[in-house]
Length: 100
Image (cartoon, rainbow, N blue to C red; front, side, top):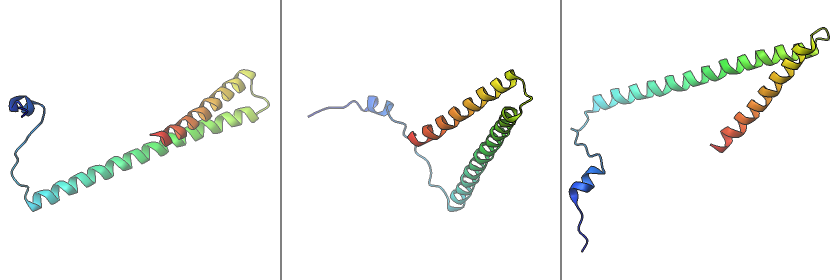
């Protein structure tokens, strides 16, 4: 028969004894957790669309710089580099999201 050291076993776990939760306290906790989750989702969505709007604005500026024949070669080179970075970043974001 195998013997186990209960003291060593107790150190490897976190055991808590809590009184039972009342129904009204549980309902209030669940409402609070739901509100926190909704706020976190909203914050993530707004942040995503703000970042997307910034990338679209920069992309539009780059495209306009490339279409402008009077733009200097340095400006066109900068615009091409920025567009390439945005395209590669977007593809990396899309493929990275599918693997996780």
